[in-house]
Amino acid sequence: MLKATLKLMPFFLFTIITFNSCKKNSDQKSKTELLTQKDWVMSKYELKSGSSVWIDETQYWQDCSKDDHFVFRTNNTVEINEGATKCDASDPQIVGSDSWAFSDNETKITWFGKTSTIDQLNETTLIITTTDNSGGTTISERITFVH
Image (cartoon, rainbow, N blue to C red; front, side):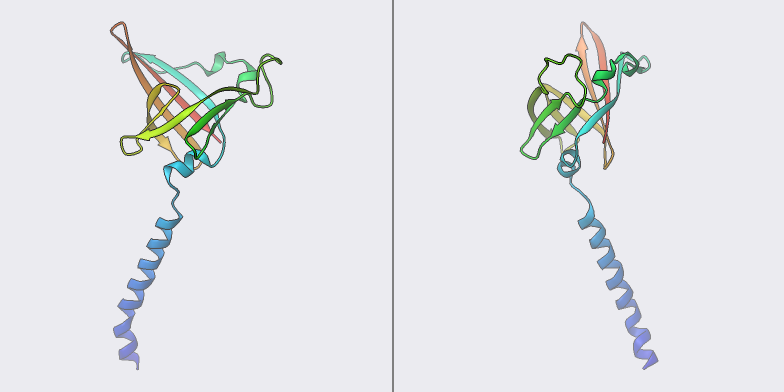
């Protein structure tokens, strides 16, 4: 009986390992799920010109802009919501909306007329970089969003 059990041990181990690895894959969220599961708040906005260093522009934001959130929906629409505080009480709650779409095997996102590279997208953080050429100078914009 012991010999029969020992012979089946590799089969049982293979079955357990296979089952566990399948479970992990099914628990992984798609990029659409990660993007649309919760609202995003911009936590950092950086600019750089050419090959210079990134400059954090966040320090210049008004407090009323720091709670604005970005709502990506599964129907491929996105809106910018003023959040709890508005800089001007007469401003609408939704200050902008557009469509969004992934491209290049979900490594880029197009929204508000710009295509950005997705540097990071996970449960808590979205970092995108957009690069434009202006008068022969490359201007890069990097935005970090958090939940």
